[in-house]
Amino acid sequence: MSNWKTALFELQKTDMSFSTFNEVRADNLDFNNVSLANSKFTNANMRNLELNDVNLFGTRISDVNLSNTKITNGNLRDLIIDHVHLAGTSFRNIVIPDDLNIDDHSNSIKFENCNLTNSQFTDCDLSHVEINNCNLSGLKINGILVEDLLKSYSERK
Image 1 (cartoon, rainbow, N blue to C red):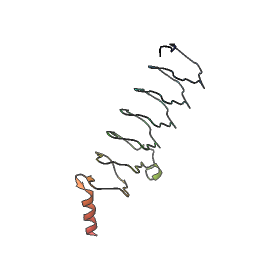
Image 2 (cartoon, one colour):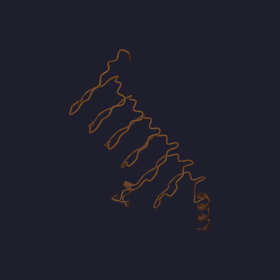
Image 3 (cartoon, one colour):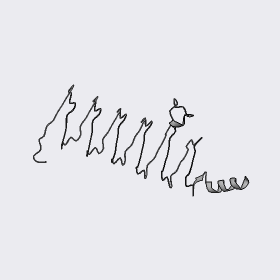
Image 4 (cartoon, rainbow, N blue to C red):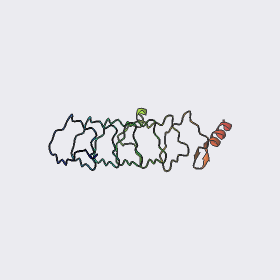
């Protein structure tokens, strides 16, 4: 880096569209009221990046380390999370928007091919939840094994 140029820019009302930056060190930048639409970031260190009041509609994120990331007050409608590690992850205060038609199953939240071993659901509204083709061994509802409940139900039929 000894042969790198150092420059300090204070740009206002500047159009830098279609610019290319290669091997640039740009730590501690402050962007305010900036359009970065259709931009690409590849092999970038964005550790401790802070995004506030940002529109990320249609964003594609792959091969990314989001450890210790916090998303608050976010609209994650139609979000797809695929092939991710969620160890130690917490989902808190998750709500279904008031304007959502809960009878339209295309709006439902789906968990498919997930390993949720040792997960905990506390104070959650699970009304009308469907569980299909899942391994329920050890699953408890209010301390009662679901296997025992299903066995008891089958015996009473």
